[in-house]
Length: 106
Image 1 (tube, one colour):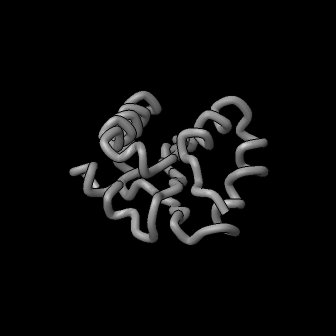
Image 2 (image 1 turned 45 degrees about the vertical axis):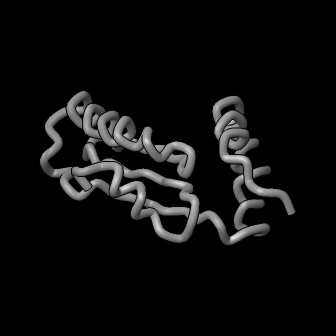
Image 3 (image 1 turned 60 degrees about the horizontal axis):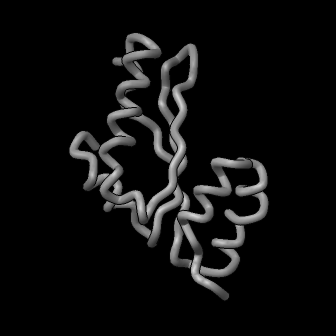
């Protein structure tokens, strides 16, 4: 059993999202308990006034995670018409606290 290569997974996901998820992602959970999968929901969706403003919130959150990018992979979506924000993150370790520590707004 080799160590999971997060950068290789990110590259695979960028080139073919379906192949990366189907072939690589689930192997992580079969071979190791060093990674965890977390779903997040933005708590203040009712305050979002436009798609552009909501995308700015998401962009800011993702920019603030740059400091932990070697320990995390995530995708976030703005759902219309509700402007709710949801994300899914693959985190190194069992606790995603380092992700939230990198973002003072969380």
